[in-house]
Image 1 (cartoon, rainbow, N blue to C red):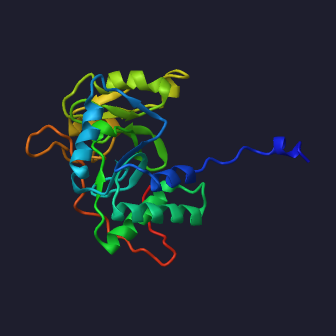
Image 2: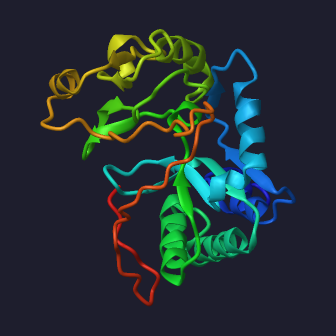
Image 3: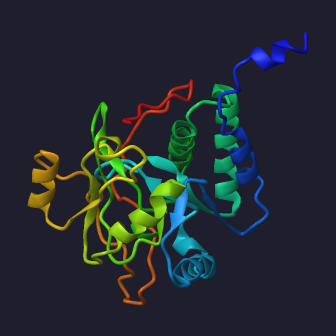
Length: 259
């Protein structure tokens, strides 16, 4: 009966629509961002970065995305993806789409992208990069099994794009960009502990010993290198970790992953 439809739970959110449109993008360069992002930029830096990426054909990278992996591991974080259209990226996106379809439209799409990238690397030719933190600033959990405390990857200069909800964005932009020297931004407490609806208190960490003490860890997580062009042009480059974690792709397509 028609009334039964009203009693059913709403459908689980799914990622297939986004993957489908990415795989069918008509553009030479596609920059796909989630709805939960906030622009902190007060000038044309984002436009200039996008134009530079197009002119340089993404500096030789086929795909780049935010990275939630630690150390040399590159683990996709799909809120921020840039793709240069070519045969390699087309094959990768098609494989990702088909993997997602096979495993279920509501399956974690970051896992399926990781599998597709691992398979593409085994075949050879694909070049995968990490989006520079000024254009992909995001908090990551520092402890397994606990959401807080959280910390960003190292940041130099202005944070132009951050992963934040609308009510957090303005406050976080200010806190991210108060001090522009090399830093990591940390959120040590659940904002709900401060006040319901609070965007949370962001702390700038500028030294390793400060990080280790604040997080109560022996080694500060998510450390990586500066992303400035070595020729001094000031353009931010995408980073490609040299030491990829080697994994075995089984016949089922399953790959071990760490998040």
